[in-house]
Length: 373
Image 1: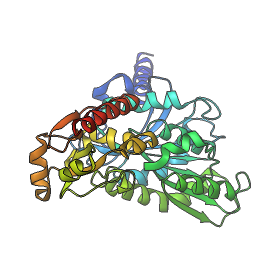
Image 2: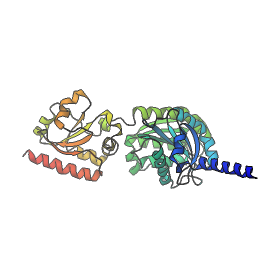
Image 3: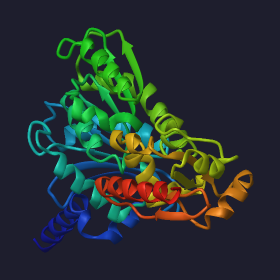
Image 4: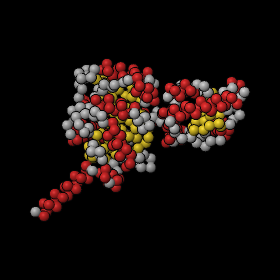
């Protein structure tokens, strides 16, 4: 009996370790790589994949995967996603495939954010290299989650999804990447939903890849088997080359960027204030750079306000901009209001509310313009 009791205790401890590793960071660290079935502090069962050679000092891109309706339990969810997770882990992603608490993810974005934050406490996940993929109704939840958290996420994918794209939300999609994968004979969600969503997202400025494949199915296993071959490589390419590019702020179309040569003379001649974006490709993890690139530059009100300035961008790590950078005398990523005498009238080196930024910009622009009279 004692041996049976001891065996039962061991089994209990193993079960607790497998489902409650959230309680012990040391346990997470022991899982240097591989796949694991876990439970979050919020009670969400999830399947986690950690790439081989994961380096906490360098971090990793992150992929969130959501199922649609019909997944019965955590084991069913694991079986469905196991091949996909293995492929994404091989590509270098930390991958999380949670099981919805109920039949679907209705109202579940807050719980998902909590799960992501829990993983962030354990792993170094590279901001802006977060991507998310969803099947069917899970794609709709992914879409809402990503648009509500563009500081973290930079791309999302839909497989057989019906995206509820509305005018207010789609404006946030300007800097996102989207991969929409749909079977032409999907009997549950017609392919026209995918075509319409792709068109709306493109109109908002998103980078969209629409892939249609001939098959008469809505089953998640069919979508994952076919979609993994194209979506995972696309997502990897996105996070490596496009997700956090800072050398083309606003894609060079959001603001009227001008030449560095004769910039201050032009300010005097036209009696205008200058708006300078000081940046470097080294600023990938700089909070100000991320704020400007992904929140401020795409904002319509900001673009309109910036049109009242003469704009210039200066890469302070590039010798070609050496003289311009020396005049500004600022040593990090910033947004600057300057006058024709090379004076920095106002500098923004930390993120702040956009409405406050707009009021400040107007105030200091008017101040500079008055100084010419």
